[in-house]
Image (cartoon, rainbow, N blue to C red; front, side, top):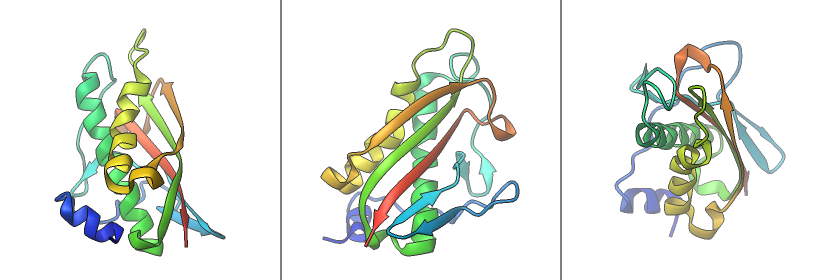
Length: 151
């Protein structure tokens, strides 16, 4: 089964590629890898939420936003190389705008990791970092970068 068929089976439609908010491109290919720029939780061109996780944003909401970021990353990969060219997800880096004392970054970034598992199965198992930060661009609660291997 192709990855695009798997997405359809799951009822997941990739969004359009989120427009960059500064001087960069959504994704680049280097050899057999595609690296995405940090993807924010944009939905239909608008930031879905702002605020810090553990204060204005609950961990559960942030996990859903991480999933949205991961979908935006897949859209960037698809626009550059096609989702069906993905051989495996190599690495996910997640940033969480964290309220003081919030230490649940790994659970938040699971929103992205679990999506990749749903879609790609074993090929979605990846290395990962989950980092708490003071602020993210535009006040976003979460940001995701992805590296995938393509054929």
